Image 1 (spheres, rainbow, N blue to C red):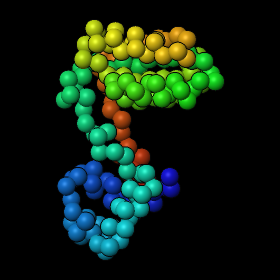
Image 2: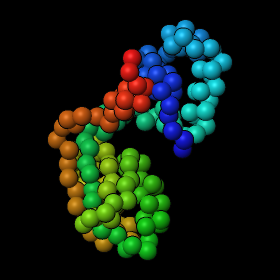
Image 3: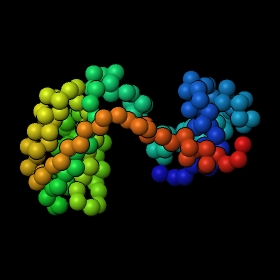
Length: 157
């Protein structure tokens, strides 16, 4: 993944403000040639800077009202197979390999406590999982944000 320069950041901030902007509207708003904006967007997509559109979907719209974070202790040599097994569970929305007491931190969504119990048991059924600890999110105090970082990258207005 390559870096984002100030123009890339300005393009992304404009799209953050209005995701339906056309390339022509972006070029006019930013005072940049249309071909430049088009090439920059293609480069950002090709380099993996732009995430999947599905990442913007709120899980509550799909009926998943509960969010939990599951810390896992796993058999170290089986990290790739553990990740593969976790990816098979649709309710697993993020997986992080971590340092500290836990080997992995897994973000899951569930419909309710019964559903969370089912998911926790499915995670524990993975052979390489030694121990788990689940923390239920009561409230998302701040969503994942990138805008503040893009504003820094864009430089002074």
